[in-house]
Structures are given as C-alpha cells and as structure tokens.
Image (cartoon, rainbow, N blue to C red; front, side, top):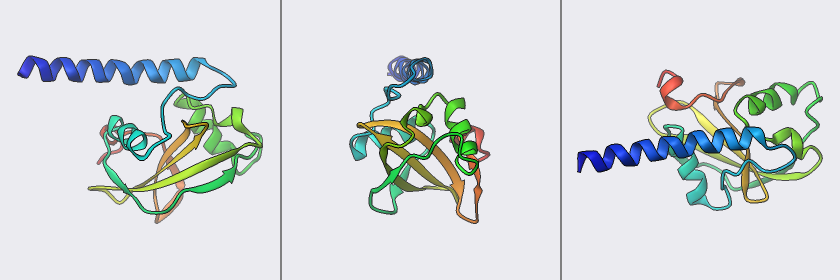
Length: 140
C-alpha cells in the first residue's frame, strides 16, 4: 500500500512537471492544463498544494496586451510559470476566484478555450503582491 501511494505521488509529480515544461515550450497555444470544469480547476489548485472554494461566479474579461504597464507584471509572472496569457491579448477569458483553505490567500485562475492561461495567489489585504508560488513555497 505504501509503495502504491509513493508511486502515485511520483507519477503525479512527473505529470505536473511535464505539464509545466510542455506548457512553457508551446507558444500561441493554450497551456495544456485543463480548466474547463470546476473539477479541473480544483485539481490544478491541488497540484499546487492548495485546496479552496469558489468565492465568486465566473467573470469574463478581455486579456490586455502584455506591453500594458499595469498588466506587464502579471504577464511576466505567467511567463515564469509557463502559462501563455500574453498569447491571448485582445481575446476573452474567464476568471475564477477561490478562497484558499488554511491561509489568508485567494487564487485567481484565468482560463481560455477550456485551458489555464494564467494563475496567481494573492492576499486581499495587499492584492498588488502577486505570487505564483505553490503552498509549499509560500510559507503556508
């Protein structure tokens, strides 16, 4: 039983790494990380070390140009984690917001064409402090 759990953990970690590498290497295409359903989005949060609950309905936004001074820091964070938000400039996307359990943080997932194109965690008391770190790296 212990070996099965260990193997499952190794396979899950490998899948997450492959998704990140694959998403980073593709341009002008979605990330390859499914986000079409609530379950898809919850699985993504779980792979980052988080569990949470939706706090708002889906919002539709138009993705700004990555060169926009206000949007540039967000676009840079997404590029660091291999998410192609800059490739979706001028297109519509859906935003899903989650309150993360056992923390003061919220997560926003930006999705287009059923796939994740942007993700961040933030403290609502200081929303300008964006983070892409998973739970294990965020000090939680």
